[in-house]
Amino acid sequence: MSRKRWLMIGLGGIGLCICVIVIGVLVIFLRPSLLNPKLPVYTYTKTPSTHAGYDHFELTLGDKTYVSDYEEYALFSPGSGDHAIGQTADGMLLYEVYGQTNYVVLYSFMDPVAVFRNSKQPVLDLSTITVTHLKLASAGVAPGTAPEKDTDDPQLIQAVMSSLRKGTPVTVPSAVGDMKKYCLYLSGGNLYGMQYCAGTYVDQAGQVYLARDALTKDWLQADPLFSAWVKTP
Image 1 (tube, rainbow, N blue to C red):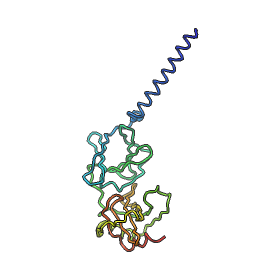
Image 2 (cartoon, one colour):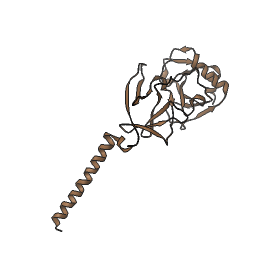
Image 3 (spheres, one colour):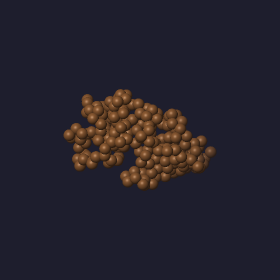
Image 4 (cartoon, rainbow, N blue to C red):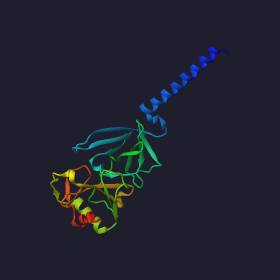
C-alpha cells in the first residue's frame, strides 16, 4: 500500500476519533440524561417562591409532581444512594428517601440540591411530627469537621419542639454577624431517613434563639433548658 494511502487512512482515523470525542462532549454537556437511558426524565423548573428569599422547585413526570419550597427548605437527606428513580435532562439524579413514601432528594453530581415532597401530600407539620434525636453542629462547615453534640433526652427535645411550635417571636438583633450560628438537626420519628435543620443562634450576651430554618429571620426565644444545653461545652 502506498505511503499516500496510509496517510489518508491515518487522517481518516484521526477525524473519526475527533468526531467521537465531539459527540461525547455534546452528550455530556447538552443532554447528560442520555447516559442513563433507563431512568425516566423529569422536567425540572426553578421559579421565585411566594415566600420572600426562597425558591420554588418542581420535578414533573406525567401526572406526578414533586415540589420543594419554603416548607421543605429545612429538610436534608442522603437519599437511598443505590436506588435512583429518575433524572433531569441535565443529568441530576433523583433518589428515594429511605423509609419515606412521599419524599425524594435531588442530587447534582455528588451534592444534594433539595428534598422534594409529593405535591399531593400535605406539608410537614411541626406541630404533629415526632422527634427522637437532636444534633447541634456549627453552621457553614461540613458535618463532622467541627465539634458536634447529640442528645436523646426527651425533656430537651420537648423544650425545643415547644419553642418551634409556639415560641415567642423576637426582633432579630442588629449584630447578626457577631452571632454564633448552628444547625440543630432534628431526626427520628416521622423524620426517618431525613433531618430537619432548625437555625440556632447565640448572641454575645449568651441569649439563645431558634428559627424554623437557617434562612428565615423569624427568630424565637429558646427555652432555658435548651439554652443551657447549647452553651454547655
